[in-house]
Length: 462
Image (cartoon, rainbow, N blue to C red):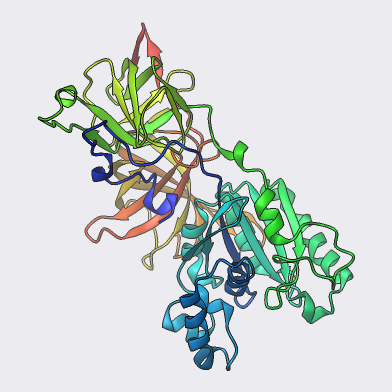
């Protein structure tokens, strides 16, 4: 599940249970270079075929997967292997030749590991696209070279911008159907470049491809001698993502209080740690931290990971912190660094993607899930709806319908501690949950806070 739809996720409670040798958190401290990316674009632009081609040509398929493709060829491929079936697993998807739900696939090359989210192209499945893209480092927008830039091309590029995906690839597909025309490639690139500055996306790579035939996907194509840039896989392997991590402001949403009480290990008898996934920043043993909402400062006594005790840790590692002082901390609390304090408040402004058939209306109450914390909330105002065609805001709409993007104001029953989504994609994200049905009805991105946690006479207060 994505960050927006599941908010800040962390390992299950049982994964933090200490072994007889040491208290442990869920994940190894060894950094792994993983690129998360999604594919998006209009219907029939070739998103699923592109992913199938990446997996097939990079030799990332098992024998049983190839056999399954061959068995399904007679049903859906006219006797030929249909690479789209690698991700279009639902019967309805195969029958209609479309993508309905988000499909995740994993593969690796000697240079990097990859997590792919294949997202739908239909307007009615915009919510699924938001789900798949919310944790992505990079977004691939496919464009049919014959149709050029259409509304869905703009819609998905705008969503990538709203979700603050730092890297964008515009893959101009089906170039074989336009005779590998350099002129057509330049026309589409020029049209994209006319509206990209308004979206604030800075790292953009244009690549002409044929997903069906494999041109410029894994291997360079001889059909486009005028193109001198990288292949798609070559770009995915080399795009710089290390600087995408937020290492400035330490944030640890507490998921679980670790109290093993193992009678066989005396050193664990009084062990009390706070487990979760670091949302951002770096934490070190001896560092001063602030526990919220308690508002009490303490020092980090120990840091435990799956590999044992360490002197420092950073996002997105999963850790267990032991503090020098006994503080009332539970699930939903947040431990933060003192150098850059988070915002705090009950009056919030956010951009949302509405995901439910019942429209969003003013005055309705929901549960707001932010990181590991859930509070009651009410939507007090609908500020505007985004017009995807013009990328302009339509002021004061009466409601937001399913798949609409807009800006709203929310009042929560108690303060939450957060950062603006632009600076922290984990502590700036939330979901709205319908009371009674527990249905996720919206994914949201918080605006930068107006008020911050402030020190007063040496103590920290809300």
